[in-house]
Image 1 (cartoon, each protein chain N blue to C red):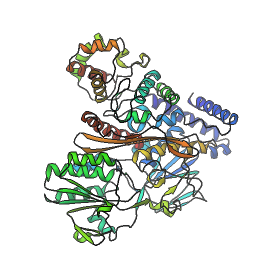
Image 2: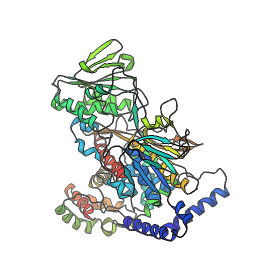
Image 3: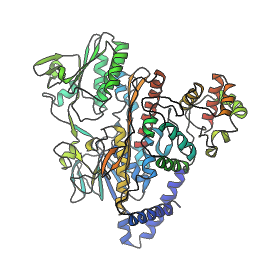
Image 4: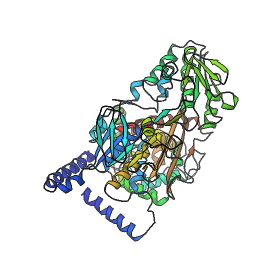
Amino acid sequence: MANFTRRKFIQATGGVAAVSALGFPAIVGAASKKVVIVGGGTGGATAAKYIRMSDSSVDVTVIEPNQHYYTCYMSNEVLSGHRTIDSIKVGYDGLKGHGVNVVHDTVVDIDAAGKKVMTAGGQTFAYDRCIVAPGVSFKDNVEGYDAAAMKAMPHAWKAGEQTVILRKQLEAMKDGGVVAIAAPPNPFRCPPGPYERACQIAMYLQEHKPKSKVIIMDSKDKFSKFGLFKQAFAKHFPNHIEWVAAKAGGKVTRVDAATNTLYVGDTAHKVDVANVIPAQQAGAIAIKAGLTSDSGWCPIDGRTFESTMHKGVHVIGDAAVASPLPKSGYAANSEGKSAAAAVVALLKGEEPGDPSLVNTCYSIVGPNDAISVAMVYDLKEGKLSKVKGSGGLTPMDSPAAMRARDVDYAYSWYANIVQDSFG
Amino acid sequence: MGCNKKALVALIGSVFIVGTTQVFAGPSAKAMADTCAGCHGTNGQSVGPATPNLAGISEAYFVESMTGFKALPKGKTHAEDARPATIMNRIAKGYSDEQIEQMGAYFAKMPVYKAKVPHDAKMAKSGAAIYDKGCAKCHDENGALADDDAGILAGQWIPWMRYSMADFTSGHREMPKKMKKQVAKLSDAEIESVLNFFASQQ
């Protein structure tokens, strides 16, 4: 209530300022700074909301192709059947409520010198500051994994239609079937994701198709929350999850979608359901706009998230090189707030303050069993750094009651991060 | 009011920058407090189902809680003279005592937020009588007064209050003497009623 009153007050004040400014054209130009945000995922939406909350005089436009966003986080629960696809669907009314202009179109280029953004729909948006949050795109590290193969062997690494395809394949699979998850090389979106996914699918199989199993074919020899996941595999799914490290012949190099076959070199593995997650790089528009380095990701200044490739353009979320922050939803949300604060300050001609960031990530690894990783970050000598002594993993020997609490906290994390980013 | 205050803060900020070259003040209270929102809601207003609201809790209670979390060694979920936790100990260790005070002051300035917590009206009614007799002296105004430094219980999420009570009754979290005496008189069902009473204060 109090917030609404305050916002109304600010709006009213802003209105008065605008009216009086009509007599002073020079001030009108200064009063309405424009920010264009490319991408309405977690990072982009958060930045939009927090800019408007900090300074409602800023004109904020989010350009996003989709009418709805499906959160990647918790999409593994759609695969187990523990939640519906609609439960991870988010609209843009929340942002509109904060006075954000939401445009459904696809950005095809960014002119950093001319400070404008062009769309497939033929629109041009001028900006004072641009924030790019395009998420990830896929590399062609797996031979034969083309657009058609993507439908037959879904990656389900961007939630929505792909998640539904994979869920339907799991439902249609016979008992005794083999589900393969081809896990990608580093760095990629949501480092614990493939392994939580294995647990979620295994929960479904245990209950409905107990003769079936999940094989994780990995491009790596180690992964996020390694000890905790291995513990969960052994504890909950001794007969339902098998992990094959790269060095043990897990690295998928080629697929044949027609026969549902995964190849590791010349060795063929024919499976019943294949979830192929390719290697990743920054979203296509970041590459097109020249925001990426040779790494395929976007280097940024740690204080402001401004691109080191193009001035006036900030990059946040999975596309940015925000290391040591991981490519996670919570990190994208936290980066969105840091970029928002920096952009608001820069538009006023002020010095941006020091950022403070957090990552918190839960994985639900079994019935009443969740694990987490957390970290606090700040700026040290101009670089994003872990705050010494903070963060880390759920203890290996934490009591079952505390693991069960973390399932509740994981759901609270989900409800609140969605509200905080989009609401 | 809001605009004036912001201008004042900006003014103080610029004086600081002018007076001290290359000295970084560190992140602002807002920058730090905003990172809590991913789990505790925008401006500390949690949409649940289990994480508590932070909006409007007193600085003293915030500092006591974070200091308690900070004292819990990594790798433990409870320890003597520390607040039990699943994850908050790992997060609290990311802030200095001064930063914790700054965040506490920031949340304390917000109006108390009471969430629309689902609860059992019948249990809330019987809980009200227990509250009057045993809890009201320290948890003032039906658990909505920040100044009693006993946290805000009005409009809090039941699972969180339930976990807190489990920590108290198991001995993993130290109870003030008066609370220990009162809680000893209550059955599990009565405790649950009191929690529903607090949740019903919206």
